[in-house]
Length: 430
Ligand code: CMC
Image 1 (cartoon, protein in one colour):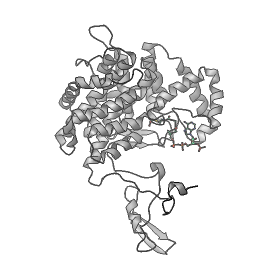
Image 2 (cartoon, helix red, strand yellow):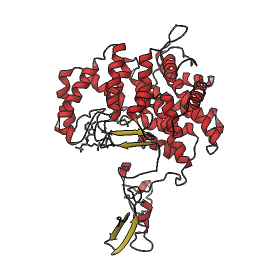
Image 3 (tube, protein in one colour):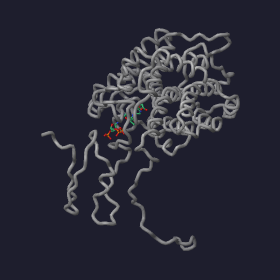
Image 4 (cartoon, helix red, strand yellow):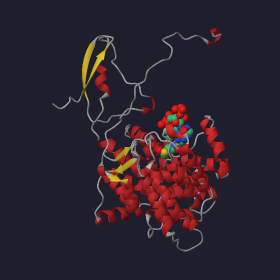
C-alpha cells in the first residue's frame, strides 16, 4: 500500500490528534489553525522570520535545486539558454511559458524595439536629479514616475493593457538606465537606435559619442546578452517577493517594479556586485588575500559575492560567467581584479570556514569584474541587474495576479510588546 500523504500531529497541550494533508512536500499553514487549546484560541500559527521555510506561492516559472546547483527557466537548463538563446527569446519564454516560433520571436523583438523611446518629460524629470545621484536611485524614482504617464496601467485585469505595460517596461528600462548614466557623467542623452539588438542598443545609449552610428562590439554585445539571460529570473528572491507583495495590493506594474528595484538595491541582493568590486579594490593585491580571509573568518567582514540562501553548491550562473570573462577580456584586456578574485576563490574553497558553511561564489562574484572591463562604472552594476530582472518580476507578477489562491499579502505576527497600559500625561512621566 502506498504511504499516506498526510502528517499526524498530536497537540500535547490537549492530547488531541490532527491529520493534515501533504501536497508537493508541504502542509498548508492554514490547516494548523484548527489546532486550538480552547474555543476562543486563535489557533496555531507558524513563525518563520525571513521565510526560511515557507512556500509563498506555487509557480511554473523557475526551478532551482540549491544542493545540486541547478537552475531552469520553464524547464530549460540555464546552461542551454546561455549558450543558444538570446535575452529577448528568454524573456518571451519566461512570460509565455514556451519558446517562441520564429514569427512570434520576430514580432516580440519588433514590439520591444519600438517601445524603447520615453516621453520627453521623463528626460526632463531625470534632469532634476542631483549631478551625483546614484543611477539605481534614479532608475527606481523614474520607473515609479512612469505610472503617471500611463494611467490606464491600473487596469491590471485587462490582458491587453497588462501586455502593453509589460512590453513598455522591458523596452524602456534600458533607456532610463542609460539616461541615468549619461546624467551622472554630464553627457547628452543618446536616444534608442532601432537597427540594433536589445543589448546592442543599450550599449549605444550608454557609450555613443560623436560617431554618426554606434556599432557595438559583437563579443561584448553577446556577453551582455548572456549576462542578462543569467539574471532574468531567480524564483522567490527578495526583489521578486517585493514585486509579488506590492503587486498583490493591485497597484499598477510600474509602481510594483519600482518597489522591486528598491529591494534589489540593497547590498545583500543586487547591490552585492557593487560591493564585490569595492572589496576587490580594497584588498588591492593577491598577497593581501589571506589577511582579508582572516577578517572574514573573525566576523569582521563578509566575503561579498559568496554564499546564497538557496545554492549550497556552486551557483551555476557563476560557472557560466567565469567562461564569458575570458571572451570579454580578449577584447578589453584583462581586468587586474580578476587575479585577486581567483585567489580569493581558491583560498576560500579550501578553507574549512567556507566549506562547512557551503559558501561558494554566487552570480555576483565575477559579473562585476566583467562589467567593469566593458566600461560600466561600479554604480551601474545593480542597474544592469535590474534591467535583466525586470522580465522575471513581470512574469512572476502576472502569475500572481492570475493565481486564484492569491490575495493581498498580509503576514501574521507574534506580538511581544507591552500589555495594555494607561496613557501617562507628560508632566507625570519620570
Ligand atoms: N562571507 C562570510 N560569511 C558568510 C557569508 C559571506 N559572504 N555568507 C554567509 N556567511 C556565513 C554567516 O556568517 C553564517 O555563519 P554562522 O553560521 O557562523 O553565523 C553562515 O555563513 C550562514 O549565513 P547566513 O547569513 O545565515 O545565510 P543567509 O542565507 O541568510 O545569507 C546571503 C545569504 C546571500 C545574504 C549571504 O550569504 C551574504 O551576505 N553573502 C554576501 C552578499 C552577496 O553576495 N549577495 C548576493 C547574493 S546572489 C545574488 C542575489 O540573489 O541578489
